[in-house]
Amino acid sequence: MALSTPPDQDIVVIGATGDLATRRLLPAFYNLERENLLPQRGNIVGFALNDWTDQDFRVHALKAVSFHSRTGLDERIWDRLSARLRFVAGNGDGLADLRRVLDLDRRLVYLSVPPSSVPTIVQGLGGVDLADGTSLVVEKPFGHDLPSAQQLNHTIHEVFPEERVFRIDHYLGKETVQNLLVFRFANPLFEREWNNDGIHRIEITVAETEGVGRRGRFYEETGALRDIVQNHLFQLLALIAMEAPVRMTPEAIRAEKAKLLAAARPIDPADVIRGQYTAGSIDGSTVAGYREEEGVNPDSATETYTALRMNIDSWRWGGTHFYLRTGKRLARRETRIVIVFRDAPLNFFETTEVKRLVSQKLHIRIQPNEGISLTFVLKEPGPVVTTQKVEMDFSYGESFKLTPPESYERLLHDAMVGDHTLFISEPEVVRGWEVVTPVLEAPPPIVPYTAGSLGPAEANELIAPRLWHALED
Ligand code: BG6
Image 1 (cartoon, rainbow, N blue to C red):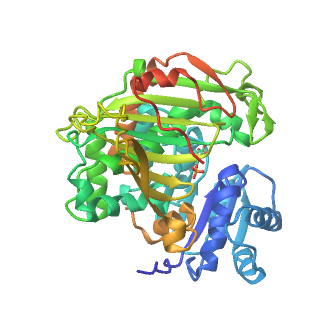
Image 2: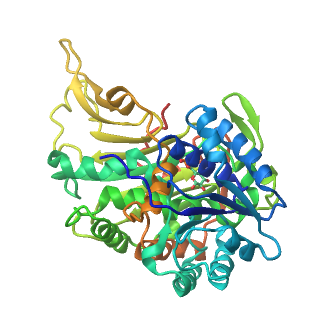
């Protein structure tokens, strides 16, 4: 089914000159314009502390689109987008000035700012009478910890009703992530094994080669646990492990995700490894260590890597371990879920050349090289019984012959039309913080790892005697 054109509305991006707006939001608006998925009437208003004019913002947006859009620049589409762009400087009476440039009764306000700035802005929007008719998109991390997230929900609800609040986690907008529900609930063969009887463990990895780039100051407030684990990784966990929803509606899906997270046991700090990258080399180029990055404290104890073991205390999952890890400046970029099925109860081949049977695994490649593969063991042709691991593979690129749209395009569209399916609900976000609270309160010491490596060796002890699946190209 084709996506619909959103109703007329203005779009405001608060924090419009920052990294997220530059690399992701402005290119997403450009591609939505290309697909005729922006409202027929409505401006895109950038708001930030810079002392800029509309023209300065257009120049900035043109660079952002040229550099970061997934499709090449087409002058006619750019002209249409550019005609919508306005800028309001946020210093002084910024929000009152913003009120004046918004002509339409309906609008979407996107808060692309650090969590600590959100309450003041939300109250300010209420103060200049901008609450009515506004839907609010709040970037992750939502709050800094459990009390601040609860306070933030309270502050937001004083100004905006829950049905107009969109807590964004851009992983939910990725095609491969949306596919998880279809894959699980349209293919009963897998679903029948999808429990502690059939599955030994589930590993979820978000590995990046990028460092913190221009975001050192933001990252110092955040760290990997808040930046990736509490949101992206927990959302992947919820989708891969939740029960079937009673129907495919936003409410039913979000309720099942919340129920899964409610069953997640708060993480024991002894089950967590926190690492920080030191100088090294990525793809043949030398890169700085985290403590040398711009905006980072030279004695920083912020983690750029986290690996952890956790349990879901539910009838379905008691006894299956979940291993989550994420890190910056690792050897390869890879987001992947690996389902490791239980081994055969008996090894009939012990007396042959087959020393050890390799576990059957399902690899769900979220990115890059999007696809799904199932590995299993077969006999190598020949007179002696020896085994080989083989693979059945589905690849998005080969089967569908297209590049999936960027997740922000889908999510901006859905927020404009008011569809909450791919956004995080209040109970999910609150429970996410509860689950990580023991680690925030008693963080294990930081261990170093070299940029370009597979992360700290200590993480191997968490999963021993098994091995993490190796990051692949
Ligand atoms: C963001 C994090 O939410 O996700 C970044 O703040 C991270 O630190 C990014 O780099 C990764 O997103 P993606 O889509 O490139 O996997």
